[in-house]
Each structure stands twice: as structure tokens, then as C-alpha cells.
Length: 428
Image (cartoon, rainbow, N blue to C red; front, side, top):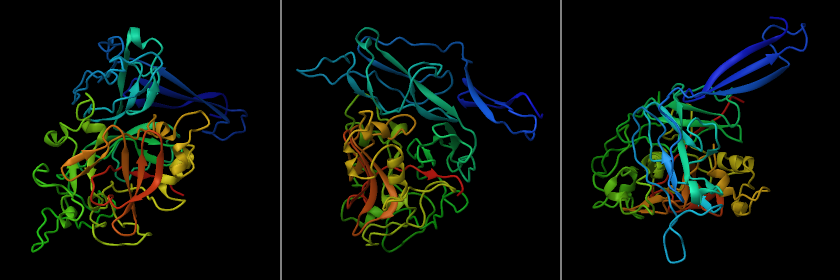
């Protein structure tokens, strides 16, 4: 109408438990219909699953709850401190703790992080965030609950980034394999996947569902028979057939490795958090991350941008080579400097690494794979860009416990298995 107060919109941002009301008021009856001078957001928290509720956790431990009555895949153990002669096996009050990344997956939902309350009324944490343990954890333990966000549509050619408020989370389905990813508009004003890509070699890549792929991927390495395929490929047994060695041309074809390969990862996890299939995603070499446009052994120079990648259509692999690239712009927006100097702390005394791993940014320590060995899981994160570097290098986002480098280059980049996050942005 032409005056008064009205309910503008109602949305359910997370698992139908939190309802957001947007109320608008008119300052003048002269305003056009449907316009409001002031708006206010209200949140109502409900619990539609009466059987769900708080779960007790043993003293000195962190317990991770899947927080759903419907089907959830994956299991997680309780977190304690590393045992040893100088340490208690229990987490102590007010100590610094890096949370476990999630090993839970729920069909039709994206995983957005942990909350200290089952109904999401508590504090949100990223899956690998550094937190200060509660002052009573030695007595009461700490229970954390998975935050599930129901899919709101397909990722392919999604047009909702412009209207999504900064810091708000939604979830979208990749139509190629029906994996659902939590998505957030981050501090840079762009919308990012806040889970790592899990696309495997069974999904078909085409110009209608993949970002300009040109489909040059090959199924099996055979120099005499260069079969062209529109699927990712992976070695049959990475324990006996080394995956992407430094000087191997087979790296162009052994292009993807899933973290749920139990043989490869069973002995390479430095904690009891299981294999972390879901938060860590799949490992890709640069050939597969760029949908075959970034071959090992080709010197593209320092200014190469691969013309395609394996992100869904309408999304892209982040750029990573200049002051205006996606990784550096995000870093600056998060409070960093856009360079390795991010080893310094933010004005609030938090390391930039912890900022990246906090909700809703949700970057994780997924490590990388070379040959038949996984390195740096649970301590470092490596994320591909679409930008090549001289020799066999490629620009990466590098993440450790003390520093972040949003535009580092490494000759290991092309043949080692690293992580992929996709990004999109509102129209200019």
C-alpha cells in the first residue's frame, strides 16, 4: 500500500530451523507502492525435529554431532589433545584448538560449519577453525552440531548472488552429479563455494554444465591412442601406480583422486577424525582443474589464464596472478595485505589463517597428494587458481597455521593433487 508497515519477505536460510522475517516501514505516504525507507530483519528459531536436542560430551573433549534425523553419511570421533609426556590427553580450559573438518554428508544439503547449539542459536564456526576452548570444557566438554543448509536450486547459471546479503549462506546443487554445496557471499562481494569440490570421474562435462571445458580430457594414458573424453580420469590403483610423479607425462591423464580412497588415506591421517571425505573434497591436478587446458610440461609463461575449468557453468576457478585476482581481492577484503605478509595478525589479534578458516569462509587444511602419498593433511591447505606460471608452475592459495599467501607459485602445482573452490559474482 501507500503507508504503514508491511512484511516484505520470509526466508528459511538454514535447514528450515531459522526463519528470517524482513519488515519494512514507510516514512511518507508519498512513497511508491512496494518501497520502504527503513527495513528490519527478525529471526525466529524453531526446532521441527522434536527428537533432536542437546547432546552431552565427556569432560575435556569435543564431540561432533551430525544433527539430523534423516540419512547422514560418515562418522566422526571425539577430539582430544595430542597425548604425550608433556600434555594431558584432555582439552584444557581456554586452550587453543583447531576444530576437526567435517566427515558428514547429508543428501540434498550443504554443510556450512559447526554451531554450539543444535538449533543453530549458538556460535557458528568453520569446519577447521581455530577456537578458544570454553572455560568449562574440563568439566562439561563441548558439543558441536553440523549446520545443514537445504539446496535452493542448481549451481549452473545461478543468478542469486546479487541479492544474497554478504555473510549469508545458501546451498546449491551441481547438476552434473547432484552434490550439494554450501555457498556464501564473502567479504569481497563475490559468492564462493564454502566446501571443496567433490566432482568425480563419473560425471559428464559439457558446455551446458561446465565452465567452457572444450572437453580435452582423456580417459587412459596411451601415447599411441589419444582418446578424447569428456570425463575426468583417475588411476585404477594409486598405491601401485604412482599418481602424478614429477616428470611423468601420465599426469595429464591421471587427473583426479577422491579422498575416500581408504587404501591411500587410512595411514595418512594424523588424528581420529576419520578420512574427512566431505570437507576435504577431491584432489585434482592442474590438468583436471582446468578441464584439460593446463598441461604438465608446457611453459605458458607467467600471464597464462586457462580458458576453461571444471567449475559449474556460470562459475569459475579463481584467478591468481595480479593485484585484481580473485584470491588477492578476497584476502584484502578479509583484512589481509594480498601477500605473504599475512603472517602478521589482524587488528583483533587473529591470524589471517584463522580468518580464512572461520565461518563462513570455511577454508580447510586438506593438504596435497604427490605420487601415492598424501602430505600436510590437517596442517596446510592448497587451492588451485586458473592462472599459470613460468615453467611447470601454477599460482595457488597457500594456507598454514601462521600465514596465508594468496598468490604463491610452485612447480609442484601442476602435477600434485590439490583442492578446487569455485566462485561467481554479481553482474557489473
